Picture 1 (tube, rainbow, N blue to C red):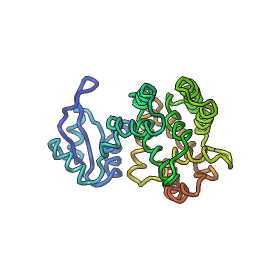
Picture 2 (picture 1 turned 45 degrees about the horizontal axis):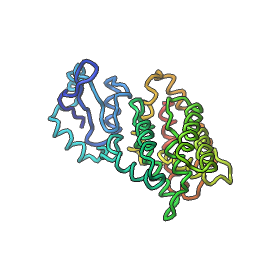
Picture 3 (picture 1 turned 60 degrees about the vertical axis):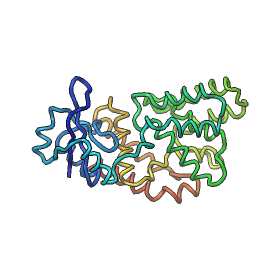
Picture 4 (picture 1 turned 180 degrees about the horizontal axis):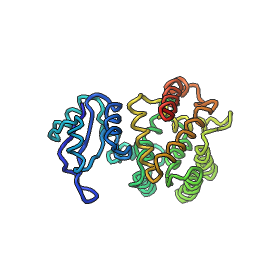
Length: 292
């Protein structure tokens, strides 16, 4: 079933309600599409809908409930995004990880933390950063990932304007400037910048283990469970909200084809074991859906 809470959330000169499903994101997306609600209104586990749309949504079958009831429905469904997966809740876990890699540089941490939390970011935000750091843990096992790889994860989307190639280059230059200021040895600084640039095409050389680790971690979302993959797609669409639907669909289809053509998609054996089958299934399903 689809549920709506009261329109209590002010924005853009009106008030908004949350719209959720108690069974699946597929049901929620289908209902929203049928009602003409744009994908950019989706926010991870719910749609934000303006007060003016409520009567027609109720007429279409959505059930109005109190806010606490809606939250309980979402929790019971298993679809609610936990607090740790939301950008605003990650300062402590990210700070702990930063102190493991470059302690004593709180100002640099805060600069990067603020960059990853910029308002225009949806997928490319703090949750993505934490996911990459956690993926690196999975790829390296008991051994800690190399410091240069971890720092490259922190810097690889530090500049994000949605311009492929330029974002990576500007992020690499930022890493060079900030890490030199922090006193990191020149060889490590150069390696971090090199790794950031490798993420522009996710095609590390066969003998580039550091590049393979970073790229595989960056692409790990492709091998996620269906609900998480659906949230990823919705967040990416919001990152490119300034692009029209037709142009976005064409561009996204080209990206998906490029990913499917990568050989290998994941370079390290551990990444292939963890994510390859699901990634191919997710990408192929996305491409098939976009052509329907």
